[in-house]
Image (cartoon, rainbow, N blue to C red; front, side, top):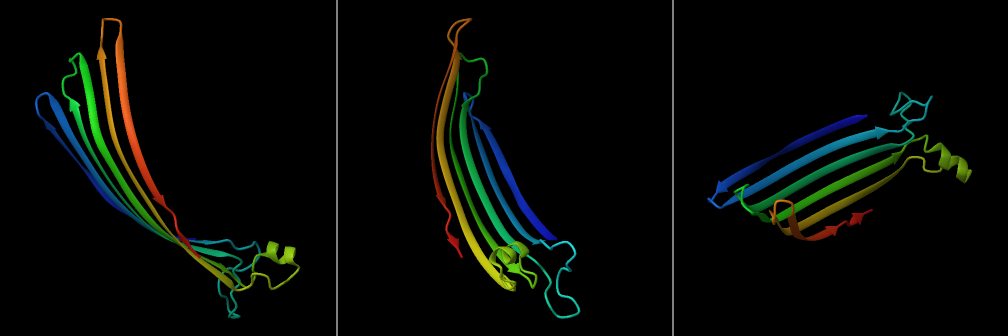
Length: 173
């Protein structure tokens, strides 16, 4: 098996107190790149090219992935914990994209189950398949909440959130 993953990212959080309210901004960005190979050899069979020049792999799958993510939150909140009514309101945005490539190779040994089921010794022998998926996700939200103490024994909490989301998942085979 071969695997390599590189992850880079970070975030910035900024707070500003206006006296009666506190503004918070949180921005985040991450990038992940990965390559992975899986060799699903069959016990007793050699894997990879050998001295006879033939490829004795049964099934090898290569994955290649790139993933980007960005998010931004702006939040305004009451800054006094002792106030009768405390509140928070904000906006949130999230965007991600991912490209995933997959290469599937059946070696000289093919997949023995497919060969057995098809009654054909050459089924899936030395064949290849390839696919790419280009995924996108975008989400945005607005929210608000208030809570407070009406009497010594009675409190309330009320909140509302709206979220919109768009997803794309085309696949190219």
